[in-house]
Length: 362
Image (cartoon, rainbow, N blue to C red):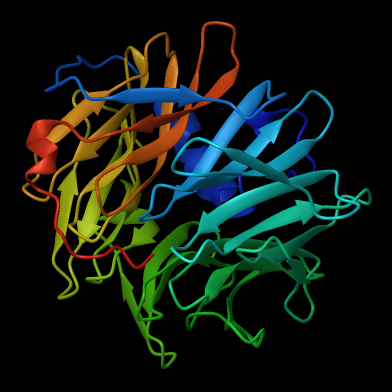
């Protein structure tokens, strides 16, 4: 487990190291398929906080505010970018790295930070800038992943035995630890406005299953057909869950979307050997990345299933991370020099027609 990254590109959330990184390595070893896709021009803005040499946005809310982190050549800082493009930098006192992970409409941010002793802690930053540290009881490493409109936070922590557990922190600071039945490692990745939590858990040394935890603590576990490892990444207000999975042949990583009623639809990027959905908005529009024989690209999939690919100009690696109710996407891309920058993508005309006027409560 990497607890003190050496560069912005290496700073991957702990819960994804076992899943997304392993899957990425898998597909990079099996490249060689053809590439074809619908690609349509849309408004793309690139950005970096002042002093940044690597920028990683993680979350965008309904108003268009973005949180994430950046590297200034010395340490990692958290940032908040307003809808007008103004940056606010923040650091937990004494931290060597501060990461903004998720942002709600109120402007409350959750994330994690590292101290000099390489121990990671969770934090919540109020809209007025006040920072509060938190850790579940028994945690030696805490990583919040998602915050909802009510201020409830979910994520994962590691205990002294090296076992991961899920947690739910209420707005009042009460923390509940949880594990689905049969779990020997739990990774919570998203929370809905209703308080439903999604994620995945280990069963034995090889299998990983998706789960949905109700606000009352009841569990529904699920897997796409023939899945060896299922790794949900996000849940929307309607209870639709997205993520990736691979089968026992280990040949291809697929994307999926699961409806509230349990129906699972599998999809892949054009010519992809790895498809990684990252975020789904209230309308059911999905963004993420896929890997093909020409590298890693961004995609947006509308609620009818049509997939559009995109890359910022000069990108050699595109990594969307979050989409809001208006269909605006943020994420990062790597330039020819190997440095990461933030981007903001507005939906094209085709996509705008599929966006709801309903609020995004994430």
